[in-house]
Length: 313
Image 1 (cartoon, rainbow, N blue to C red):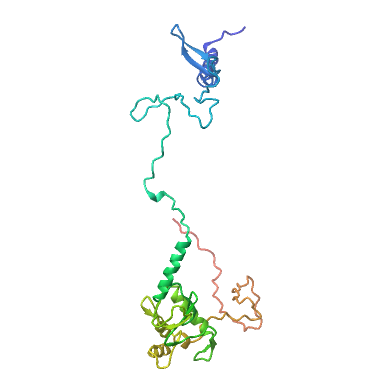
Image 2 (image 1 turned 90 degrees about the horizontal axis):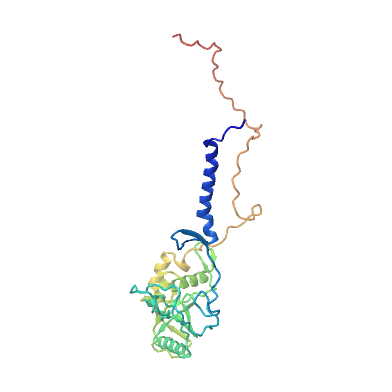
């Protein structure tokens, strides 16, 4: 005989169906275009939205508010579909107009235009350098030797010194011969660094290519600097004789010892010149049988006695 259905067995299916219907109405129905609209009787019903365009809509009018046959050059006089409030808060009813962009707040954000040098500007710079050279100021000199400069098509040799030529060799107190001329020119170039020199142009013709005179760099006599550092020799009885004596006592420049510039000599066993890495001790070294035997004193052995018993409590 079948037992009658009780409330405990009927209630769970009813609740499950109710929850499913509520979830469907809340999450699934809106994606299918179901919109709540009020009917004439005041009740709310669900009606599927119609996405088709109305038949009375002109074919040349698009939903975006633009004309189908308008070109880029034609002005669009249509009203905006969704008017927005302007600055004063009123709704915009006039067509949108394009305004000119505002100027930048500062010239720092603008790109600097490239200014190409015209022939007149190049000629003006050339004339300026020629005028400076006529007054004795020479830009970007190049050291050909310790005491000889090249500026354009002119060569300047300093007075009061004997120039050390680049191919000159010197012998130090130990008798070692080294290329002191190359070292002197390198030291002179490092100190000069292309800076402008000011030379005395008294009695020098304008187109004279070889000029023998005295020059200064930032207020320092160039010839005296060379003699004081030992990279040039003073002429006999000249004004820089005392500076040369001081350089000889201090063993500076060409009067000093041979610089350590040679690479280490490689032997046949080690052609790379790199010291070998120290060898690690072997794990099981082989005993040397030829070494004298070293005896170690015997350690005292404890007597074999029984372990004392635990203390009685």
